[in-house]
Image 1 (cartoon, rainbow, N blue to C red):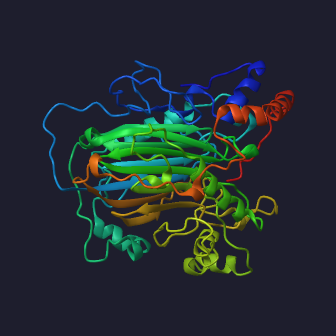
Image 2: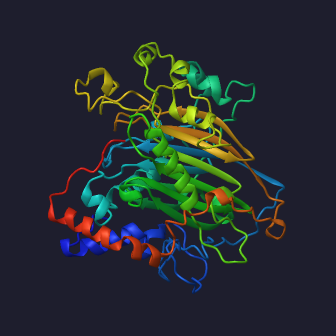
Image 3: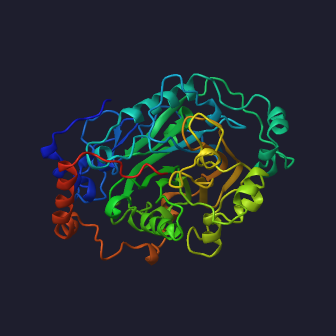
Length: 478
């Protein structure tokens, strides 16, 4: 699909709708699966998923159950799955057909679910942020992923012992050397389908599941939160996908947080996380016990370019040269903020045994700081790209980065063992109380009407100013 062009006269309306998330497409998402049943009529709100009836290949929020294949369904007490999670800031570059994703998607064992998040799949310029969404690159990424997952039988590495000997950094944490190595799954002809994908400007999240598993997945929903320009546009923010696997609720949150390495920028990133937790809402009826917020879910994966940097000090470059990652991680803002209880309290992250993922020269293994003479363009290397999780029944067994030179970030990937309890049922589920600390800010109401009254005039004025001037780069800094 190519980029949709709109006349300048339509830009103010487009901007207002993007600001307020009013567009009917704001919470639609694409899928290989058809909708089961028709959409029930209900009140529209800013957080509703609205899907046209009889629109093949699209899922809605109210009846997002996948059509069940015929045949008897096996019932067990538990279901143990492998889940691959990957994140990659691709620097505004559209992929070419020859781009090989094997390095990124390789893992010690075949996964049943692939959760893949991208940042900056389009350049973050005024046209993409304020205008119509360019979904061409997303379609290219989906095509490449589909080919990588389905045309190679499996992506598990053929020789774990070779992996252990050649990449000792992985063995230190991953669990591959704890006496219980992951059994190599050589099952042929594993096919994956797209459960859901969603784009918001440059942020893109897609979830793929093995075909044998798709009959178990229901209640697919999406929710987007913009945290970019004026705190609402989508050049920064989050896409969240919610789904149920049997009666276990899963949530995947792909984010691109505020950039910058000046002192105090970490506070803005902390605020992004807080606002995403507050403003992410999955629609449900008053009698529905299904999750409404991110933290209502049984298991949550948070991935993306979190943009936390290294606290400035004179010995950073010395540690970088010596590859002393442990010493550098003592200066990592995310870990420091997390230990202080200011962000991601109670969340987990695997131990990092790989080099900082940002910022590289494109098509090079050199960090920008090693070659760049301009002070404005120099960036201290940092672990911007991260994967965290929260919830019981998940164990991270592998956490590594890829080595693709495609962008100024290196991709990051992880493999989880996920335990699904098949004995719990809807009748005995207890809805988790909503944390009052994550209620929406009363100053920023969720009703479209309130936002229009408070902000439409200011927004239209600024949008018209953008239209009357040449498009300029808003922020391509990761």
